[in-house]
Length: 228
Ligand SMILES: [Zn+2]
Image (cartoon, rainbow, N blue to C red):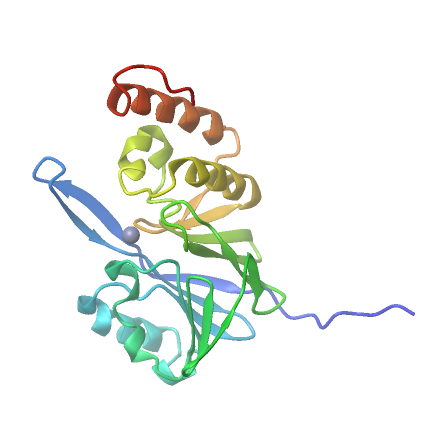
């Protein structure tokens, strides 16, 4: 007997605020805020909630998209940094996913690698920036969109890998997971920039491993006796 799965129409990803990250004062300070995204599918979802200053922007942009705070079913935070979580409190009734924990009110359940919300939307491990970072894979009419948090900072960040490695807790895992998402996704919504199309002609794994080796040789080990 053939079983037909319940089909739903493709999801939509709307970037409510593209994040940004601009160095100031010679790498001592950065003007930065996280990307805030809306996913419309069988459920309405917000991915990352920015800084406290973004409250009014979220309210306004939800309205533009025909939604209110109460209509958001899930709030998903790619990681726990302040510029990605600071308006979670606007959505007390939404299911909250941070790290690998899923909160319904004060009841937590847990997942390891993937948590499927519906046919279009899967929350998935994207560790590297830190050990509990997650992202969201979304099937849309234009292809697969990966909302990655700080797995990617912005378009072309692979050209100066040291800029994102500076924030990375697990550089090697980070590089590998970036390459995986690069292969999988058609579009990336990065943690600190607008959505961009993935350039499949670029082998970022190769380019970034080379840069990581150079960085470590220069800065970490003065004796040159550590092999990477
Ligand atoms: Zn960030």
